[in-house]
Image (cartoon, rainbow, N blue to C red; front, side, top):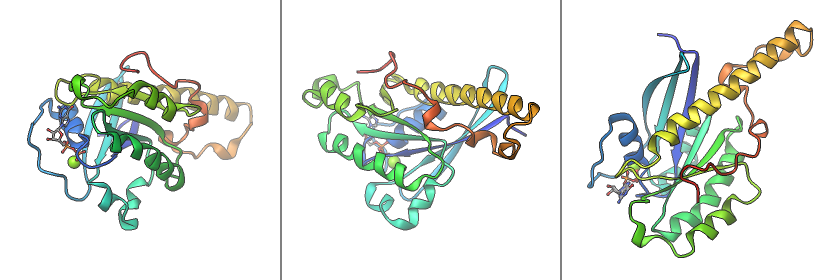
Length: 217
Ligand SMILES: Nc1nc2c(ncn2[C@@H]2O[C@H](COP(=O)(O)OP(=O)(O)O)[C@@H](O)[C@H]2O)c(=O)[nH]1
Ligand SMILES: [Mg+2]
């Protein structure tokens, strides 16, 4: 089966924030309260139809930070289109780690992926980090990042997180492809022609969508 678009999505973040749970909720529609900790790196496919186009998401799950920080596992960053950094809305330490992961992506990804921050476990309203809204705004300040509050438990924003971002990236790629065709037809930039579909988009093209209304702080 061939696809119009093939996007690699990588979930990173501190251990126990709910990376695996978000993926399972999105792909299988279920939530398990007692999940065994992920070991190593795993990936799953989700095939979508977006506006009559076939889109395959290759969703990579990673284990805890200790293993992730191992240079051997940093190859997971290769050809990443979408990097989802997950933190736990109830554990301040995991929010503090977000900056570290943003820098990791900037340093290790050559493809300038679209970066999305997911504050997970929003169902635990009572236990949320103090002044969470301000702290999140501080992290997002001046950066081209999307932010969602999610819950793998009750499903809040799980679809928006994966499907919404895939749709956005697909549309950006199409616009970009169209521009390429125009350039080629007019004889401009012939040597850009061999860029792969899924790598055409750059963060710099993703203008000012710092926060989405849905699920945003
Ligand atoms: N209340 C609540 N618990 C969650 C949520 N997502 C994950 N968990 C729980 O948090 C723990 C760690 O989840 P897991 O997906 O293994 O985290 P990972 O290490 O980041 O992959 C598990 O006990 C999950 O059931 C959520 O949205 N809400
Ligand atoms: Mg896991």
